[in-house]
Length: 483
Image (cartoon, rainbow, N blue to C red):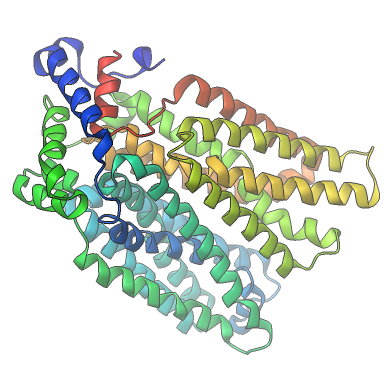
C-alpha cells in the first residue's frame, strides 16, 4: 500500500543519493547490533521528565470537572450553562493554537526549550485562574493553560520517540498515555474536598504549578534530541547526546544511521503547503485521519456521558469517575507491556474493533428490547469495556506511531498539523454531542460511533505499517525502498 501512496523524494534523485548497498549495509548493521541493545536506563530519566507535560495535560483536562459548580457560584455565573461551557472549553481553543505552532517552536528552539515554553503558560494560566475574581479572569487563565496543553503533547511524542532506543520505544511511548491518565485521576482526587472546603477550587489550580515548575527546571538538565541537533548541523553535540542516551559504544552506529537517512534532504524550511499538497501529503493525511478517527470513535462523548449512565445504575458520580479512571489506566499499562511485543498496528486493529463491539453493547442497552437493570448493567459494562479497549491502542498508539513514520525533516511540523486536527475534532464532538443525542437518540448516535470504529479498522489495515523494533532511520529507509 505504501508503495503507491508515499513518495519521499523522486525515484531518480533517490537512486543517485542512496544506493542499494547503503540500505543493505544499514540493515545488516542493525541485525548485528540486535544482540547488544543500548542500555534502556540511560534514556529513562529524560523520558520520565518529558511525561510530566502529559501529566499536566491530563490534570488540566479534568481539573474543572468537580469544582465547576463552586467556581460558577464564587465568580457569579451560577446557572449560566454557556459560561460554564466556556470555562470547560476555552482551553481547547488555546490548545489548538499551541498545537498549531508546536512544530515550528520545536524545530526552531529545540525540544528542551519547547518543553520549557509549554510549562510557562501553564504556570501563569493556573495562577491567573486561581486568583480570578471574575469570569473574564478565569477564561484568560484557561486560554493560557490551553496554549501549554496544545504545545506539550506533540513535543512529548517527538522527544520520547527521538531519544528512546528502538527496542523500548513503544514502551516509553506508552508512558505518555499513562501519565495523562494519572493526571486525570489526580485532578479528580484533588477535587474531592471542593464541596466541603470553601474556595478549594483555587487550590486545585495552584497545585498544578508544582509539576509545571519541576518540568521547566528539570528540562535544563535533560538531553537534547540528537536528531534535532544533527538536523541543525551540530554534529559534535549530537554525538555527545547520543552518548548520554545510548552509551559510548552505540554512538558511531547511531550517527551513521542519521547520515544515511539524511542524504538527499534539502535544507529549506518545510511549509504548510508542502505538507498539505506536496510530496508528503499522503503520510500527513494518514496521521491526521488516525487522530480524527480516534476522536470520532466517541471517546470524549463517553467521558462526557459516563456520569449520567452510572447515576442511572445507582453509582455515585465520584465512584463512576474512579471506575473510568481505573479502566483507562489499566488499559494503558497493558498497552505498555504489549507495545514492543505485538506491535503498534496489531494493537490499533484490535483496539478499534473492541471499541466498535463496546459501542454495539451501548446500542443494545438503549434498545426497546431491554428494560430495567439488565439494560443498565449492559450500558455500564459496555462503557467500561470501551474505555479499556481505547486505552489498549487507539489512545496511546497514534501519538507514538506518527513521529515514527514521519521523515525527520517534517516530523515536528507534521505532528503539529495532525494534533491541530485532533483538537478541532475534539472541540466539535464536545460541542455537538448532547445536541445530537437529543435529536438522534442514543441508539443511532452510538451506532454512528461504532461505524467510525469499524471504518478505523479498515483504514489501519490498509494504510498503517508496523514500526516495532525498527530505528527511525530504518523506518524512513523502508518507506523509501518500497516506492
